[in-house]
Length: 86
Image (cartoon, rainbow, N blue to C red; front, side, top):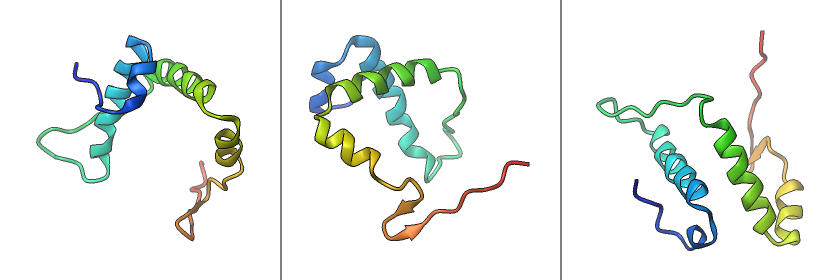
């Protein structure tokens, strides 16, 4: 597995770096390649949760506060709509 070429991977465990590689593949989801589709499921959710715990623990407190203060429905000045689950 190739790992993402970013500075953060040096401070991650091997499992966390593998999860970053997995998440990197999701960047193709916006403009999917029909010949090589990327599947998304819940099988790796535990891995992603562990990675997020690691990232939150390494972030400066001021950055954590800034992220938590953001409105998740606001993006680039636009309001994102939630779809009702029926």
